[in-house]
Length: 451
Ligand code: IMP
Image (tube, rainbow, N blue to C red; front, side, top):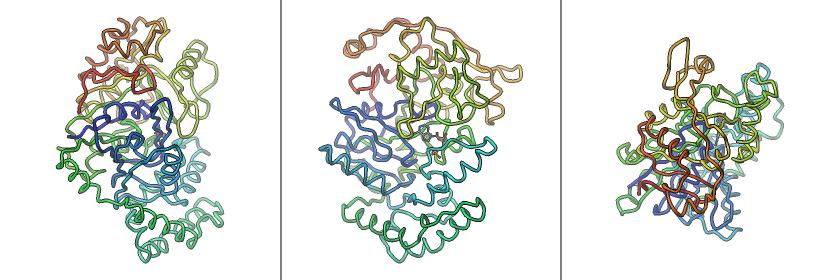
């Protein structure tokens, strides 16, 4: 069978840990969207692995697949594989022939357009990995697929068409001199070599065929979402989104598995609070981060102190970029929206240990918008930015011996934490599947394992 893991918030929900937990009995772990903008941290035998492209199951000896819905930077892919090998692992990673390739000009244009937008404070705050420009080329039918890297004539033909266009856009539209960065011959040589390495290492597959065959042979497959629901290009907070579909529908289109197979079990992952990287509204935000929080002026007293406490305790700094993340209270309209869009069959709530030590823990149970009570996410940035959270307050819980609690199970959690968790489950209509109380796989309580 399959289980799909989906971020229910704005990315960084701790999906890596849940993939690791629920992927334990799985044979294959496949990513279905995104590229090296993801930041998954896996702790294995006391060792920490930070991955931005390789599916996190590869750390544990699973077959990792990058599905056709992914965008692949081959340089990052081989760097990560080489690093894992240097650390004594033997990762087995397959790449869909239909996945699209990120080129240096995509990265360059990502930065150039963000710079241009920042003049009017309109930047998205992207990870700068070229994700948006690569999906843009895919949709415009001028992209280069992974399979094209293995065909020298086809690769040259694609690059001859696209590279002069990219140079013209950078230089003429944005007035940026790209010099040697967009040199066709250099790109051709480098990327053709990547194609040879992908073939040489037997990494290329038709993702749909490969996964279907494995499932028919009795394997369990975990489908690993990157980013989160509110960053989804269709269901997120457009334009402050990534350019793919992290919601469960993306697991079907991004792997080639039928929706009935990719949607068998869908676990939504949330943090007990909320964090956000980059710009855009965040009604429950505490304090702020200069450059990201709209109209932020530093020093909001008590709220700023709460933000700092959560940020430090939860290590809320970007895995890929190192940027401080914006933090706030749990936003239930957002989680309800996520649960409905992806049809969650289970909820994993992380960072319950991070919330320890507060007198009071708050949750936005709804919003107030133009005098009306709103229980799910509005469609536009303007409306969302105008939402005032309606808070419900919970008594906090003290710090505890979380490792011991993990060993004992759910009933050992502080009573106030249980009250909080059960409220979230009830309000979203999704049963608890797991509770995260620390960074390691062992620091989790499993209530309902989907596999
Ligand atoms: P992009 O995916 O680099 O195009 O960035 C688009 C938006 O998604 C920005 O707000 C990023 O901060 C956000 N984003 C992309 N990947 C992640 C992630 O893995 N975690 C959190 N936010 C992300």
